Length: 333
Ligand code: KG4
Ligand code: ZN
Picture 1 (cartoon, rainbow, N blue to C red):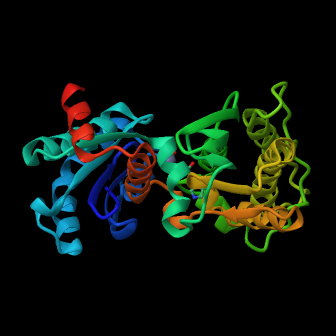
Picture 2: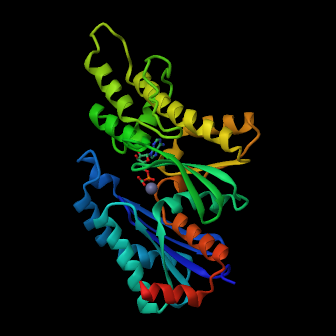
Picture 3: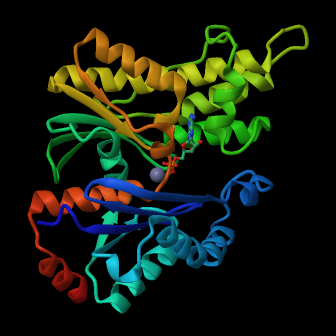
């Protein structure tokens, strides 16, 4: 069996260079080198800059990860890497580095979908997570509701028709100069703010389980544009009201999907799942409706390579592949 093998995971789909080592379902190392400081002055991720920063960082991070795991190169049994979706210039750095390691060590290589990574992240802290369950995957590029009927059998029930939830945080934060990335900046600003102070829309879509956030973002921008001098609105109240509108929108559709599918368990992943208010509302909903809830902690919600190891581990155990099968497919590809 593969359970006791050592998996080395890579994730470089956006602006985090991340490497993790997992053995026997246990996380030995979870290294994340964030590029936030580099992109902050641009107000967003600059793809070319991100790609260069990954190239500069990845080799050192690789050696550091092995050192911290107290492992030799020869101890690695499998290498996994995100192969998309993401910024192409960023993806190729981690993917090619990972594949080169696999080739040089003559070890199997497993490409992992980034969103399957997010979906597998809760397993690291909650190994009892078991299908059927519904996962709310919300990041800077995606807002999806995924029904996991069994491992490897995913049904996309709904997704955003325009901006992703994280994008809605990021774009408004940039417009207002609240900080980068927008989600954590708005969450911090909203602390102590009155979330009912400003009436913002909760957009609806024609798709039963789809999302839309661009109208909300525009409404918030118009609100600021039309603000009169005598209107007393604090940045805190504005941030809290905007965050509440995003969280309410996410919850409304997700709750309906949970009720319709009648799954016993809910889960989630992606950077927006780190949001305190969203976690609070998901927990309340789970408790009221008697559902199990398994969320990754905030550090495993935003991009990381531990989730790539976790997805690889699950992939191997569920498909019951043996290591030679994986090696074959990696050479063919
Ligand atoms: O999954 P992720 O790290 O990268 C992508 O795959 O996109 O998600 C990044 C997104 C960004 O839009 C960021 O603003 C948002 O997640 N985010 C948050 C929080 N932390 C990160 N949004 C709301 N509240 C947070 N605490
Ligand atoms: Zn992500």
